[in-house]
Length: 102
Image 1: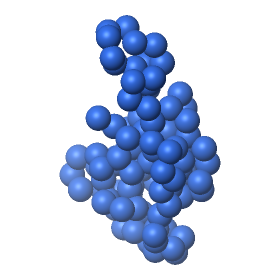
Image 2 (image 1 turned 60 degrees about the vertical axis):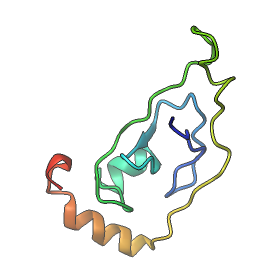
Image 3 (image 1 turned 45 degrees about the vertical axis):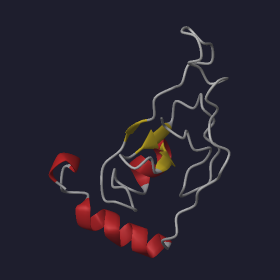
Image 4 (image 1 turned 90 degrees about the vertical axis):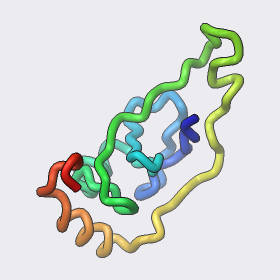
């Protein structure tokens, strides 16, 4: 089950479970749309993969036990350990390669 991390790992913008601008990679690294599009160039600075929109977990249990109320989002904030310069160089080295070919 997805953690639904509460923030962008780059700019620290709040990304609540209902955020439509939250993006994740296959390892659940979480970034906001603005950072993905303007800084990261669709390159995860941690794994080099691409991003997809993070799914929204239902607020209300349409099936018993399956909702945000039953499986709450994570409250642990995650921050990138890489410098801005390192992220920029890493993204630049992979941005011309399609995510499925990385």
